[in-house]
Image (cartoon, rainbow, N blue to C red; front, side, top):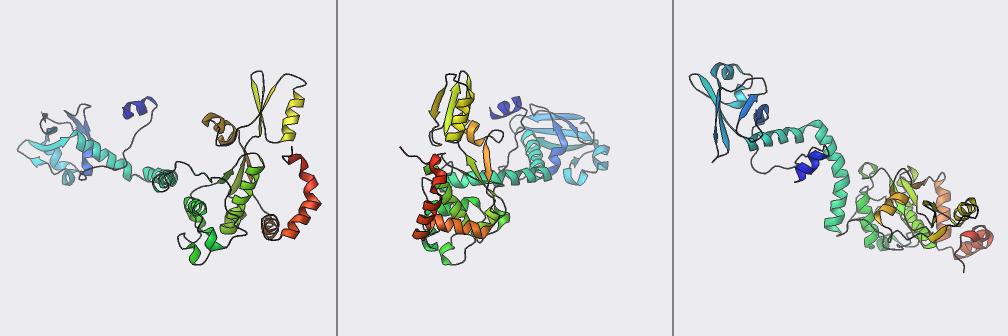
Length: 336
């Protein structure tokens, strides 16, 4: 069933594991009929004199000309039983199929794509088999990693699971991180680490907490430009059959104003947990339409200062910062 469905889409299925004993590689050099009852020819062009199929063993006794067998460059691998006028080789459809599969899975191209596949599917298998999830949700607000010490940080299952899934380890020395490997950028399983949260103030706080975690445990990921923020829409605006997505109140107002009084429906966009897969793909996941912000702190020390000010223990400094700068963000505040 799967083979037929794949064939309709021009997809070639290759088994990655074979049961039973390995078969001689030379079997792949023989061409067999679709029903498996006839050996048609050898890869070097030799055609058999006669064939005898056994339905009981599902094997084909194939007789090639004696001089062809004795002079063939594959003689030492085939080991035919030489007779007066012919050489006998016993083959089966399954043996030839297994030999072809063996060649495919040992080819250089296949090894390359298997490594690519393992880099993606292995993570999903880890999530499913070890953590019993099919995606990696953060489950709300995580621990503030700037205010917590390392023993407390690594007692958080959410944080340690996230670090294990990334695969690159942590830039932390000591017993607290004994369950995680030392940091190695080459072991990072992804080309991008994308933080995706709701577009409201709670989502912004979760986003900041995740960035803080990465800054504290894997700052190199931020410095090297691997960390991105995926913006999710705050509003969905529909006019007739056309739909717009607004990522801020200002953008919503601009879109509504551009409609010049036309009747439109403005709805608060659903949170990520409530989105249908198609909507999630359209607004957040599709590379052609999504909005990604690359996190590129040009001055790491300044970033550390801002994180410490907003999320650290300097309560007086945070109050002064809000008093001096809070007015700049009033339009983003959810005040009712």
